[in-house]
Image (tube, rainbow, N blue to C red; front, side, top):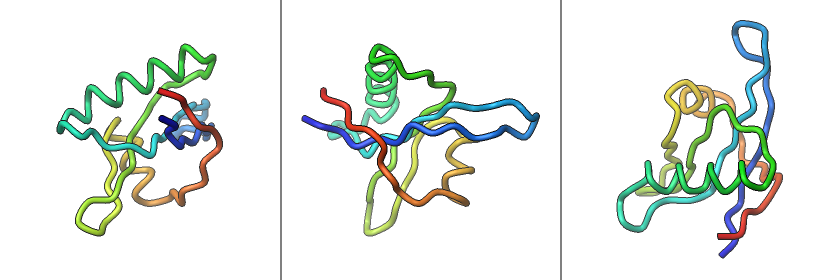
Length: 89
C-alpha cells in the first residue's frame, strides 16, 4: 500500500529549521498514535530527517490532523495538501 506524504522544512519561531512530515493516513483501528509512529519510523529508515510528524485525514467531511501539537496548529492555519513523496508500507 502506498501512503501519500509531504516532507517539508520551515523556519521555526526561534530561527532554526524544523523538518516535518505529513502522512495522508488514518488508523483503521483507532490507534492513530501507533500508526503515526510506524509511518514516521519507516520514513526515517528511508533517510528522511524528521523533527515533527502528523497524520491528515477526512472525518465527517472535515479535514482533521493528528500528531505533534505545534505542528497540528501550524497545519490547521497554513497548510494546503501538496504531496512530495509516497511511502510503501
